[in-house]
Amino acid sequence: SITILEVLESESNQEHITNKYNKVDLKALNQRYEIIIIEVQYNNELDFLQRILYGASKVIVEHLNEGSPYAEITKVISVNILYFNLGIGNDYVYRGYTIFIGTHDQEQLDLTPAQQKMFKCQHVYNLFPEYYIIQINKFPDITHDPLDEWIYLFKHEEIKEGFQARGLTKAKEV
Image (tube, one colour):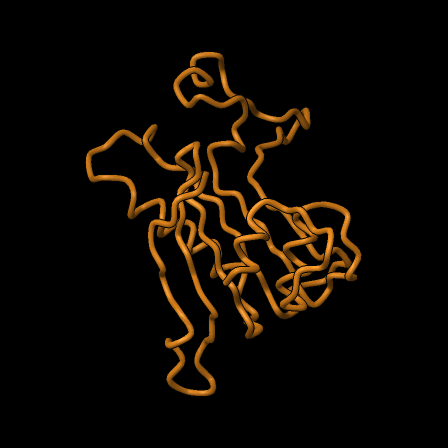
C-alpha cells in the first residue's frame, strides 16, 4: 500500500506564463518505507534531468536527522510523468539507477553479506535513488501491462473497457 505524505505543489503555482506549471507533485511512502516523489510536468526544461536529481537529493537530506547514521538514509523513487519529449530515445518509459562497475575488470560492485543484512537488500543500486521517466506523448496507445493502462489514462483522460490495473477503478470515480 502507498500512503500520501504530502502534496508538494499544485496547479495554483503558476503566476506567469513563463513559470513552471505542474499539475501536481506528491510525496508518498510505500510498504518498504521508500519515499516516492511523483511529478507531472508539462513544460520542457533543458535541465530537467538535473532537476530530478536535485529533487531526490533534497528528499534524502530532509529525511535524515542530523547526527543519524548514514545507514538510515531512505531510498527515494522519483516518478516523472512528462507531457514533452526528453532527450533522444524511442521508448516512452525509462528507468535510471546507480551501479558501480570496475574500471579494470568490468565487474559490478555489490554488497557484502553484512551490508545486505544491515540494509535489508541485495544490491548497491537498491540503496540509491531510482528514477522513472514516463513520456506521455511517445506512448503508442497500445497497452501491454497495467502501467500502460495508467499511461493511457494520463494521455487520453479516459479508462478503456477491460482495463484492470490496480487503482484505476478509484481513478475513474474522481
